[in-house]
Length: 488
Length: 142
Image (cartoon, rainbow over all chains, first blue to last red; front, side, top):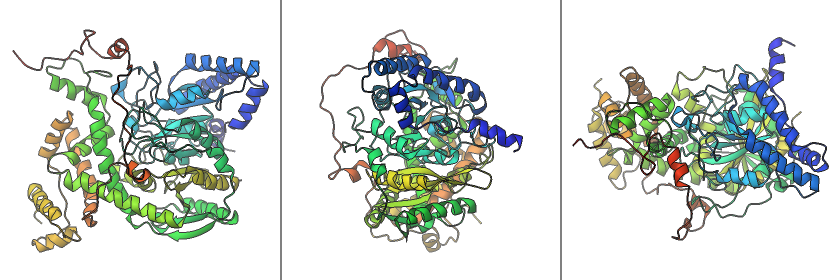
């Protein structure tokens, strides 16, 4: 074994399952405080090389762990995530803890409230370890756009973990948390989960409250869990999902027991494989790994048929117009006045705004604000933004038609495995192309799960994306479990 | 080959999109009709970049401007693909919620006063305040 392989092995470590942890905590074999300390020890050892955590919330975490230990000692029933060490992407707010959104413009900002998903995890007994590094304002596909340095892929530290939830995916892959929360606007949970070899969930739009999420694109943003196995991801989703009065776009649909749904066998499920996702640009090793996964699903009793989603290619221009337009509006609030970074010595209010924003925002964020502002400006709204929203409806309708014939659609999560740091940042279009597998589902509002499905010859993880109709996460979890069961 | 003036290009495009029953609007199709034989591309100019910078309250250095120009042009070329699609009569889909709820209505809460954030805590996050207001440079010169 070469020394490089040894180093990679040091970082990759699979967390224990929620079921195992719960058994240990209930029986008293493990104490939540000891567990929390062991995670902080591991973080202290490996975070310098991986740059996964931006800040730690030790006081809050240990106080929660103590509460869990007290419950366990009394023999009281433990809440669903009691004692479970969880990391939170730094675009979600935790009261009194830094929330940078991976940006300098929020350096020093301490939110005065908890995001709804944070409050739900808290109520479920989870031990919230700290805030996870991410691309700035969730804009990026490699976690190289963070103002606080890139996150490194635990599988190969010369490679990116993916983005924008790079920290969330790497944390699970390196056992720096048992599960994490990430966010997905155009693939930002699914792609990094795929690059790091972990499970990531794209909940239906509206399934999980966005209250307390620093907004990027309000009609696209979703909060979702990442975990080491499908059942745990399903358990996490159940905890964070549900209607929220503080989020007018959150769905009142009842939240099923997703973990129980995932236990159901897949025999008889109809799967669709879209031709458009298997053409030029798909890495051959990724293709083989996905084909092996599909073969396993067939063996498990699924019927598989080819389908066509001809509007797939229009998803990227549509996404970049809709997402950047909404981002330009959402990021208008960062102006140096009420929170965050303020530029020194500005001679006028107008200069205060532009200096603060210019100095506080990174290049990718500025690029997207520019494009979005351009797309919405007088004279262009109809040709760009409105047109994009029309195409969006065509894309969504195409999926709805497909789901009339199949229960789930399976695709590679990414056309390529994790690339090297610095490899793609020269060409914005190359980075955008890597999004094609993920943005159509984002635009349509449907749900999906990415599940590890083999590795390349160099040992890089490959992920299979299982997409399901709105509110049908249970189906996606079921299929993902079957793929997972077929892995060596 | 002569570059199309973007203003002229946009006004032609706008009038085409607004015509009912336009059918397929393809880049080369209608340009051939107007005597030009190249794919439609809107080119971003330095003036556009400056105008957008003003709107977005962002300042680009002279070094950053060419890169931004290049990036925006590359992206807009890509985006011109959308014009290939016939979307006449298609309702824009701005909020996915309408696909989830039959009827699509978003539930609004009642107009009742509820406790909000602690004012002192919120003001404490600002770069400069007099505790009652956020302080900024003068807007109007006396």
